[in-house]
Image (cartoon, rainbow, N blue to C red; front, side, top):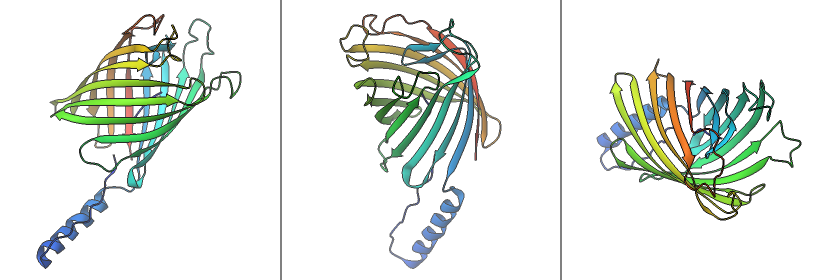
Length: 255
């Protein structure tokens, strides 16, 4: 249940004909260079499927996605999970077990990246649409603290099945390792309401530590690898964490 650049055209008002013409030419050039619609296709392969500390499959999965960045800050993401293992006969292998559709809007502000959106979670292997399919509304904010270092906050509310809140804080550090190769270190901690909790009491839920590498094959294609360590912050709130480490690789191509 995952994944998440479009250009904005600015109108500048200046005095002086020469300066105004120069800025107009620059704005036109920027508009031509920035596509009205940006599309990214990606395929991730992971050794397990773990979301918010909860294990959905302890075997290999394939997770394709399509992301479309529309003009004026709107975007759509379609993501799916394909199971290559049956998780001890709990799910059907070699089939799709989840399809998520996200519609989002990025606010036009400069001080932070603020995103509002809604996710439709669909589980094809469940008994029917009323069994587990659900809708979640979310708001997220990311702020650059220092060069390469950013902090984030995400708050999500499941309005259908769970009817409760989940919140996550995160830190991410990005670095250039060499020409075309970038690295990322990340850490996060989650807090869940009583309906998410195994004990029925709200509290700190899950944590994660991640390391990732990404190599630019071309200007529009990249190849990456990552490893993630996960666990429960409170065993009474998040019980029975099956998978505490998983890894994977991904290929992404933009248009």
